[in-house]
Amino acid sequence: MIGIRIAAGALAIAAVTAAMACSTSAEPAHSRAAATAAASKTAASTHPVETLKPLTHQALPQVKGETFTSAIVELPPDASARPHRHGQAFVFAYVLEGTVRSKLDDKPVTTHHQGGTWIEEPGAHHVLTENSSRTEPAKLLVVFVSKTGDQLKVDDPASQLPQRRGR
Image: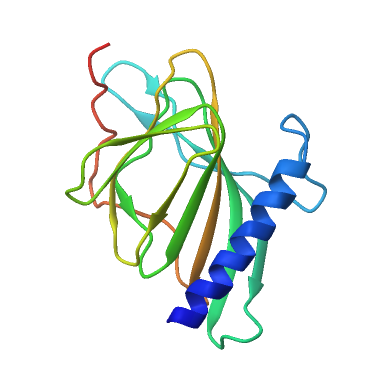
């Protein structure tokens, strides 16, 4: 497991470097088509949600059965993600733009500004992910080290988008 985390750290650094080298307005040449999260209907309107754009997906050559995946997650203004898990994946997140509020398991809500990072241990419950701004987008680089073939994000069954806090 330590070897996997070392490999994940090295690959995360490489992914951050590559993502930062790309213009924030240009799609990286090696990016696949955007995988857009389905919009969720609220009582009267559609609430903005995140989109995921895969960057890299490859087997780890020295760790049989493990895969490295990197992606850009875009959160439009006022967007949030459904509560979810990443299975047994080890997850590293880096804020490329904006400010993101996050809550894992029973830990306190944390606010991450541009350049901020966090790690999600395997099995963690991501209770809150939201763009703090109602006017500016936020963008994350997310790196997953997972079992080959595992689904990278699983929304909680019958989960609703989190209620927006008063502002």
